[in-house]
Amino acid sequence: MSRMKAIEAAVRVLEHEGVEVAFGVPGAAINPFYAALKARGSIRHILARHVEGASHMADGYSRAVAGNIGVCVGTSGPGGTDMITGLYTAQADSIPILCITGQAARAKLYKEDFQAVDIETIAKGVSKWAVCVREPALVPMVFQQAFHVMRSGRPGPVLIDLPIDVQMAEIEFDDETYESLPVQKPVVSHRQAEKALAMLNAAERPLIVAGGGILNADASALLVEFAELTGIPVVPTLMGWGTIPDDHPLMAGMVGLQTSHRYGNATFLDSDFVLGIGNRWANRHTGSIEVYTKGRKFVHVDIEPTQIGRVFGPDFGIVSDAGAALRRFIEVARELKAGGDLKDRSAWAAACAHRKQNMLRRSDFDSVPLKPQRVYQEMNETFGRETCYVTTIGLSQIAGAQFLKVYNPRNWINCGQAGPLGWTLPAALGVRVADPGRRIVALSGDYDFQFMIEELAVGAHHKLPYLHVVVNNSYLGLIRQAQRNFKMDFEVSLAFDNINIQPDEDLLRGYGVDHVAVAEGLGCKAIRVKKPSEFKAAFAEAERLMAEYQVPVVLEFILERVTNISMGTEVDSVDEFEEVLCLDPTLSIKKSQDMGSVRSDAGAPSSALR
Image (tube, rainbow, N blue to C red; front, side, top):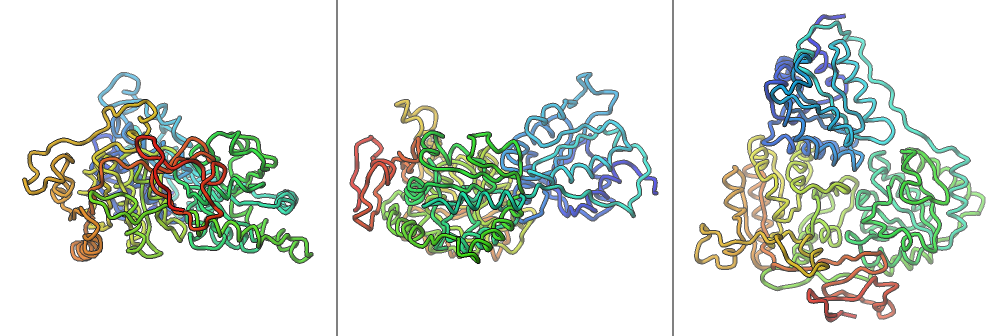
């Protein structure tokens, strides 16, 4: 046993649990932690420009590599409250991050002391566990328990609040014999797997819905093996995108109201059975439960017991880690195949593949200002299979999911349920810290980019190069599109005449913020693209600048002000606002197969390419 300050013991626990980096902002109430961090010199610290930014950096760091747990640090009061959005985002998507906050001395609690807020109570609703440690001797054990909680069952974030006098108190801690607590995860039984596979085998047109739980279990290879063994097409959710490569013959497309493919929705509507693994039936994926479930049976596998039946009651539910479930499903499927009892799915898979090849959306627009679809087309042509995309919410994310291609697990890093604007930039920095060698492309609309634009300075400060694509229509585009239902366009325009725009830049004058100037003022490089002929040179120059200066490079595309992106209120009624491609005349536009008519912004039908 060694005698040391409680906060010194906490830092040693972080070391034992594998923490190598922390993102944060120091302050008076958390300075003892920073002193211990500096004295040990074992954990890298990255100074954020905003504590919410630090929480999103920790989030991106956790999502980037299997097994990572990002750590963010803030002082008392606003340091903790600034983390709440980060906690909510991580909790919503089952991401483990550890938030550490300083607190006023115990004698000052509940007395309206300066920056003394009950962050434990505030954080409880948006975290897996939130605790204010009131006894110094508990500090190392609370940190040990935090990692156990974050890793066991459904992953999630933890907040530990530390009064300054608790941090400074001396305790006894046995550093040499410290061990992590064993991780606890439920496992499907052989009998349960047999029943699930029997139900699947009885179906005529089954699908696998692959959720983010497969990524959390690092089980993407098992998913592909199971799909190939059974011949069953896979529909990844937005959080599960990348679990099976986009060009795999059994990747059947994404389903939903917004981030979906035409062929994915058509295939789902033709299915009669769904095996959901590690997914949560999110409403942007399902639409109304009545439409989504009609005519098909469901088996749902999830690591969290209360997730089974939360949205709708499946025909059979299994509580299990996704990796353990897939291993058992493969085992049972092999038994069925050996006995000659596994159905041949080749005709069904071929029908799904045929839709995928023929039911497409158009992207080859040459107009100026640019249409966003063309930007994603160029990104597909420019970036390789190893590219990792990072994005949050908005028309930029929705169109990105409809047009981009993802080929590997954890190469689509997206906050799916919470969707806070501003998440993209700091999350991309966290991904870069976690994986220094990966090609990272962040994708933002102009408003998402402006929310936490100051974090670009962190990328310049710490030499964290990545490419940030900004599609700029000077609008809150998704909200503007939603306001069509209210027959208004109110307080969603970001446009104004920027007095600093040069007279020869008439196209830009009404677009408001000069993102190139701001990015350069924060120590980064930036390029603006205004017409299709500039795409190739701009991408090449961005790569050169990243390599030479080792800082983030912003690539801004000036879009037409109004482009409505395909979406709807049900999986069988998605409106296509732009021209669509139907390369096979037998797949003509019908409500049941193509999910809606093709409409212009005014609501009148526009032409569709057959």
